[in-house]
Length: 104
Image 1: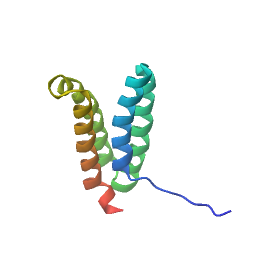
Image 2: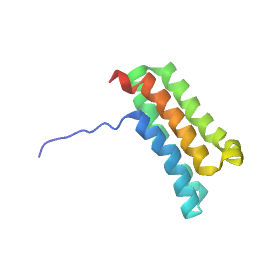
Image 3: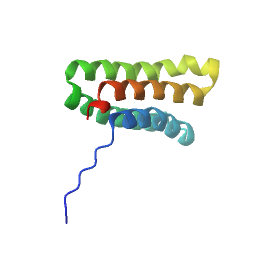
Image 4: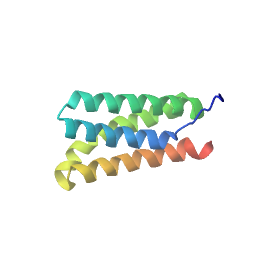
């Protein structure tokens, strides 16, 4: 068998972590389970950010990821939960693509 490695773009992983974490928490009614999804995808994205762009970029993008998660909560009160989550996920994904994914 051939050894095949598929690298998912970090932007996709970051967006999936934010949206997937929210979806899991909402639909299972288990917030900690959503947190596991959020943390796991964020860790995978952060590793890729570090591999491609270095420690400073990884730290900045990780801060954006956490800020997006935190910022979606007050934003949800104004625009609704899904629009807030999708908006911040899109913002973090765009930043990730600009700093990391377009390089590779």
